[in-house]
Image 1 (tube, rainbow, N blue to C red):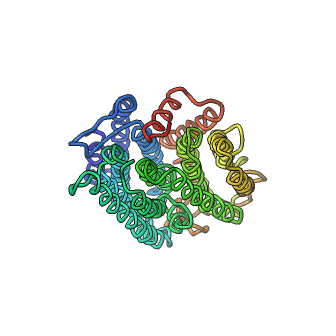
Image 2 (cartoon, rainbow, N blue to C red; image 1 turned 90 degrees about the horizontal axis):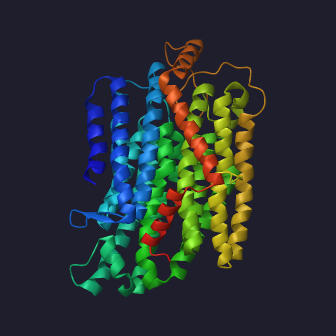
Image 3 (cartoon, one colour; image 1 turned 180 degrees about the vertical axis):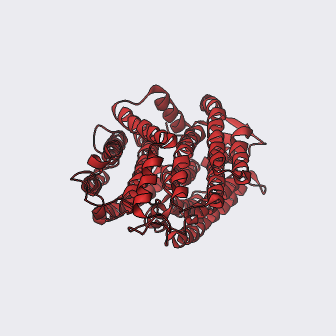
Length: 516
């Protein structure tokens, strides 16, 4: 377990110390590959046999392994994509060598904080790790303020709202510690493994109060409505590889804390209490995001509101509970972690080509960029919940869980919102993908401007365009394409079948949460 924590830390310091921008990217990629190599055997062994380290401060079971695998997979994908992305940014004068060094150092620190969340057994340590993800990712969002006028404002809004939000979670942790002292004495307990063993003996009223604070606190970080206000700005202003990590896995690591809390609150407070709160937050998130998706004119903000919707679906699945609800929620975490990064990677390329994030200014992507258009179309169909793609399967399983428990009102309301989302996503991206390409010179830009902006000094439009073509023909652009193709293939495969090893990992994670 130690190498899994040390590798991203060492990689971060190495990237910051290296002078060559090219070797910064190579070092980051080497670190991501090393992390993958060391984490796979650790995750596999912990699924069958949970492990503790340093006196129980760190702990890994099937659920930890499942979440860590997603962190590692997306960190590797972002490491590959970031090399070509930053080469292009540097060529058009939108970032300098110091900026590249800061980017790769912060990227690996970000990965470290998310890995730490998944292996923390101690409630306080997990809270610290989740807060650390906020600080590091806020710096990554604000990194490109020279080209994105709203990036600093978005980063500031993100760090203030999330820090205030998870302060509520800290109060919930204090209350949980207080409840444990009544059972095991004045020393109390902060480790999940200990709290889970005494969960049925904890005071129900105290644990209900603790859960409310934790749900609101971590829910703000997970992007659940109505405490989601930071998310559209942060995700739309961040560099595309960081947006992919924010949406694909950061939100899930925050919700991971909620799932752990559910397992220690339900034995005393009852499934009705936790389930009802989670379903309310889930439906509000899905309903509110569906409205904004329908009227959105900015495709990166559309993807951000889609993240709120999908976190609401995950919350709804956990709230419905039972084997089907939990299975659907955990599968949805995986599906969303594949589909959304694909779309943010693609949106970065589209914005680099058209120099805008306005839907009305992008047209004919399928004809002008066929491969990227096909990948974007697959991702859009997946996010909209269309069959036979992956997200349709997990949503169907969650709906089955609702039907099994006769939650017909919840089922009907979810279907109503799902239809709105289906139309909103396909309508927005359909206008971008289809039709003839506009008769205009696309300008090579970074991935943050909301509107078409003039080329950097000394980089006229034609020069920028030729440099973009040069970058797109490069090796790392081909690698970025390969990453997106793999994600698109996974979307299709998971829509047709769930591989045995994924099925086994999800079922083991359900057992780790105490769901029979």
